Image 1 (cartoon, rainbow, N blue to C red):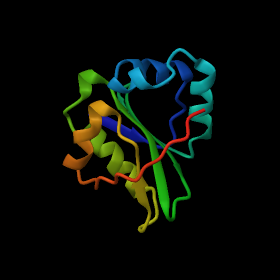
Image 2: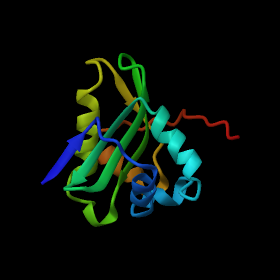
Image 3: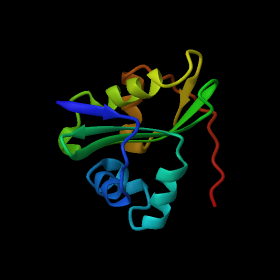
Image 4: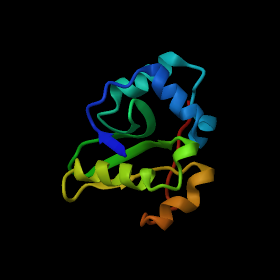
Amino acid sequence: MIAYKDDANISVGEAINLYARSTLGERRPIDSPETFEAMLKHANLTVSAWDGEKLVGISRSLTDFAYVAYLADLAVDEEYQRQGIGKQLIEETKTRLGPNCMIVLLAAPKANEYYQHIGFEHNPRAWMLKK
């Protein structure tokens, strides 16, 4: 049974380990604990999925809770994928947002087809300004 929490104290090591076990690890700075610490500290809505004591999924967002939530990361351990955990993490995130709050994200290439499958609408107008 997978438990979903929005108040879990996730350590930097647990987070890095999860990202490394997911396809998102290829696109995140898993070699920088300092960066991961800041990522966890400054996200203002984090929902996690647990199989007992094992972190198996995370939805990490930056939001105002009223208008928009930027879903920065959705990561699920590859051994737990295709069980509905990612979809449930998004549902758990939605329940914590205001009724009119939209979720916006940039899909990792390997997950591009996934989001349309679960109801997201494609928007080709995203822009990025890299460091």
